[in-house]
Length: 245
Image (cartoon, rainbow, N blue to C red):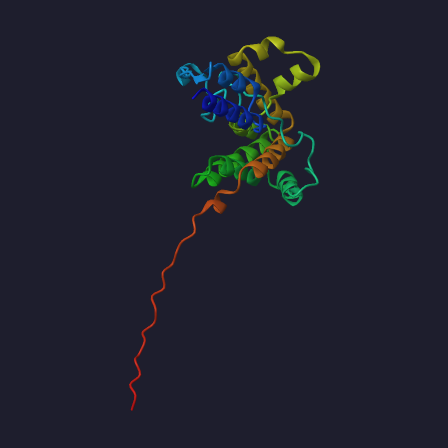
């Protein structure tokens, strides 16, 4: 019996050595369970409850994809704010379309961005029409588009939260070390990021719309492409049985 147990133990060791994906921690735990040729019972460790873990804006826990409890790292925007022509990749034609829409018809680009983000019927018209009204009023009475950014900047905040993108406040802290007190506190950081989103839409409105459009087209398909295929059943035609003479 002792000889058989030693063979089993050696067989387990050879299997563990042949697996390159097994980490050292798992090896040490399994080796500690084998004492004097007899396997000891493994005591299951209690799992950490998700109730005490925070959640991101899109409903995922903070530790989703990493160690549970550790905050997720911020994702960079796919293109910079001033990259009006986009990037030379498979979305280059879409980037040119976004640039033209942002220059000639920003109301259409804004409605298209919100439609991709919301994916609900009537989203395009419910946002494009009010934007057009504010755009015309601002151009008529003030000579520039100063009212529409108050209405459209919330879409930038929604995109940043949905895809966990790095905001302007965090980018300044990463590049030059400023805004450290705002970044440390989560609520204060979010308030600061919302203020930066508003300032971006006021002073760089068209560039902000184009950047959001390029980001959404790379991350989300158009809602019209999500339609389910319809199976149409065509009944067979009438068949007449021929009779021999």
